Amino acid sequence: MTDKISRRNLGTAALGAAVAVGVIGGVTGGQALVPSAEGDPPDYIPFRSGIHQSGITTPAQQNAVFASFDVTAKATPQSLRKMLSNWTTACDDMVHGSLITVHTPGTDSDSPNDTAEVIDQNPGNLTITIGYGSTLFTAAHGLASRKPARLIDIPAFTGEMIDSRISYGDIAIQACADDPQIAYHVIRNLTRLGTGVVTARWMQAGFGRTSSTSPAQATPRNLMGFKDGTRNIRSNETTALTDFVWADSTSKQDWMIGGSYLVTRKIEMRLVKWDSDGLDDQEATFGRHKVSGAAFAPKNATEFTTPDFNAVDSSGALVIPPTAHVRLVAFEQNNGLRILRRGYNFMDGVSEKGTLSGGLFFAAYMRDPQQFVDLQTKLVAHDDLNEYTYHIASAVFAVPRGLKSNQDWGSQLFG
Ligand code: HEM
Image 1 (tube, rainbow, N blue to C red):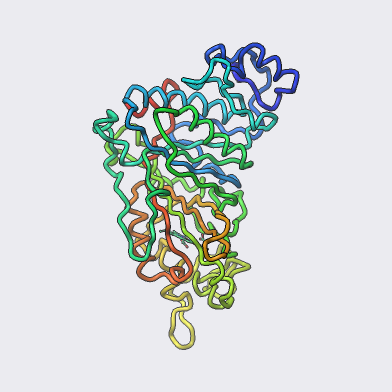
Image 2 (image 1 turned 90 degrees about the vertical axis):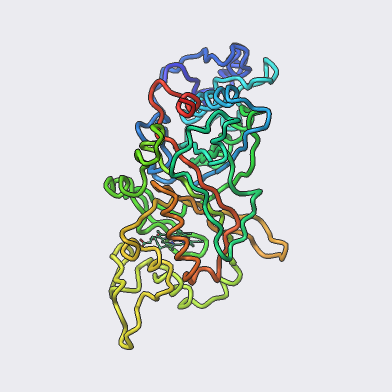
C-alpha cells in the first residue's frame, strides 16, 4: 500500500496536511499525495481477491449493509461504465482502510472525496461485493447481450407479502465489516459517487451474522434463539463450493465464471407469537434443540452430529418431524442440493401494531438461483416455520467473478 492514505494513521495534524495538499478536498482530481510506509493493515481483506469476489466465503463479519440501486433514465452506457470504474477505485481504497481517492463528479472542487466518518478506524475486515439484477441487462444500458443465462427472476410464492419498494434493483452492493459504520460508509459514498447515474432503491442493515462460512467460526444465533449455520457450506469445502456456489460456463458469460448468484429475502418474524410458544413446539419447528443446536436424532447428538432423518420413535413416527425446517432443506432430502447462507439479523423498530419488528435478512450464494426456488417451493408447502415468518422482500443478482488486475467493474461488465 504505497499510494494510499491510511485513515488510521491520519492523525489530526496529518489530516490538516492532507486537506492542505488536496487529498481530502480532492483538488488533485483524486491523486493521493502522501505515500504510506506501513504494510497492509492487520484486519484487511484484499479487494482483488482472485477468481472469486471477497464477501462470499470470507468469514462472515458481524455487521452488514446491503443496498440496491437503479440506473437513472438519463444515464448512458458510458456514464454507467465510468461510474462502475469510479466505484472500483473507491472500494479498493475503503477496503484498505484508506481515504477515497476519487473525486465525486459534479461536486465543488474542494468538496472532500471522502465523507470522513471512519477516519481513525482500521479497515475492519471490510468486504464489498457487487451484483447485477436482471433489469440491468437492457439495450438502453448497452448490456442486452451481457445477461447471464441463469439470471432468472424468483417466482411469486404463496403466502409471501413482497413489497417491490424494498425488493429487486439493477445493482446490488453487499458491504460487510466488523463495525456497522464502516459498512454504512461504503453505501453512503457509493451513492454519492453514483449521483446522476444511479439512485438508491433500498437498503438493509444487518446487525448480527446468522451463519458461519469458515470452520474457525462458532455458530451464531438468529432472533428465534436457535443456532443458525451449523450445516452451512464452509470456505474449505472446495468440492461443495464448485458444485453448488461458483457459477461456471453455463452462465454463458465469461465474467460470470467464478462468480455466483445472490438471493436475498427479507423475512419478518412474528416474534410475539414465537416468544409465547412452548419450547417443545419451537424445537419441533426446526427438528433441533434450542440451546445445544443438536438434531433430534440420533440419540446423544451434539451440534455437528449428522442428523438421522430415518430415526423413528416407539410409535413409528419420524423423530425429526416431516414438517421440521431442517428435514425439508437438508441436502440428504434434496438430492444433495446445498446453498451457502450468509444472512443477518435485522431490527426494524416498532410495527403499526406496537410490536417489535425484526427478523432474518436471508442472503445466500449459489451457482444457479433455481437452487433457492427448489428449496423455497418445498418450504412454502410444508415448513412449520411458516406459522412464524413471512417474506416481505425478494431480490436476485448475478455476482461477477473477482476482478483481473487490469479490470474495473465497468470494463469487466461491458467487456
Ligand atoms: C426466518 C427464516 C429462517 C430461519 C429462522 C432459518 C433457520 C434455520 C436453522 C436454525 C437451521 C439449522 C441450523 C443450520 O444448519 O444452519 C437452518 C438450516 C437451513 N436452512 Fe434455514 N432458516 C430460515 C429460512 C430459510 C430459507 C428461506 C431457506 C432456503 C430457501 C433456508 C435454507 C436452509 C438450509 C439449506 C439449511 C441447512 C439444512 C441442513 O443441511 O441441515 N432457510 N435454518
